[in-house]
Image (cartoon, rainbow, N blue to C red; front, side, top):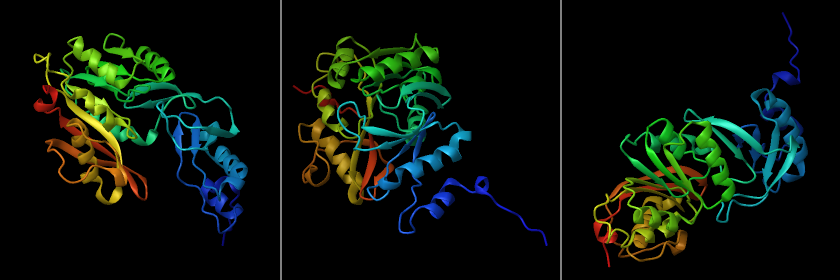
Length: 311
């Protein structure tokens, strides 16, 4: 009979933590990696053990390129979609780079919004575009939709974000991926962005509105927007929002329809109910679970003519 000695190097980070942390404590397993940065979202019960948790993760995952462990200390929010975080271990620099959809992205994880869990969703949407499509990305971030739409699908793209840091890295990513002739960037409010490109006669056919905490409220920009521009095509809009898990499809579609026709855009208990205007949706999809009670939804629809040409 042969015996084997299994040392620390053999075991996974999850296994090591399960042996070191108190038995009653849930071992953190859900985390996101963006370039060399690993992002934790520790619970109040896990916070006192943040030091040992981060050191184990850093030691076990450094071969995979992880050099920094950060912890989110407040919810994502605000107009720039960034969140306060603390560096728990490793390199304090949050400027990193990564690959997605066959493209290269540079970003500062502390200054811009990035969610690696949405990589499949980014490509799912982009892959449906045709070369002749003209894309308007109202909340473009550093370009997870815009860059591959230009680089991989050959589309003309107008990409906008209100966060100056996002646009700084968006411009860098445009150059790195060699799509400077295909992508036009701007740094203004989403309503101003859409109004301007309509006024400029840009024949965009697809609109991306990936700001789930507030995108539906910006749909009012389409009311009457094409009244004096009837020669332009009415675009297909992909609007992201959050909704309660129990009735996500009904809630999300009602919010979109309500705002298009002049109503409110609130989510949850305050979401529009009752007699909501009918909008012909191309799809209403559950993108991902955000929490046990909340999901992210993508509503895709063509801007209705009676909305676009309304007085």
